[in-house]
Length: 239
Image (cartoon, rainbow, N blue to C red):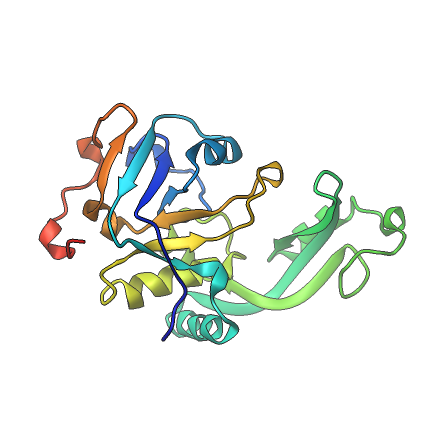
């Protein structure tokens, strides 16, 4: 299988490396440790503070989730359904116009009542009937996938079960790729570099790979003992 990989020998994490501080906080990268290649912009977008940590590892590969072809993504969905992490359902999209970004955007819900409540604040006449939904209305039911309770439990901190593809890719890579791809360290989302729209490339490192990195912050400090790097490094092939 020819998978899209991005090699990044150094990435950065902004914030304290304290697992206790992550409890109860949602993350687009789920249980992965969030990283980027531009810590200043990422700190502004994510509204996070603290020291900047450098993670260095030669030949570190990230699976590019945004470059997966349709066939591979379909295979991953099938795997996730068979594994009990994903299921088919109706997704309720609520469309609205983002005047700052000058673009139509939508939110997704699995609860119809919640979606209808959100859509009730949007008047189609305000947009001259130009809402780009299948129905022309702000509320648009579409077939889709959601993460199951089991999937959300393993992902730990993912914000919503409607983030089905991201969640499925993370879980598939963890279970199917990590055991055999020794240079694979995480997932990368090669999002548009547009800080004004709160978007920039980002990634996440698997907990199983953290011990393979050289880690220090801008003050030359290494991670605290509570960060959990007490993994036998011999279990993870050296770079």
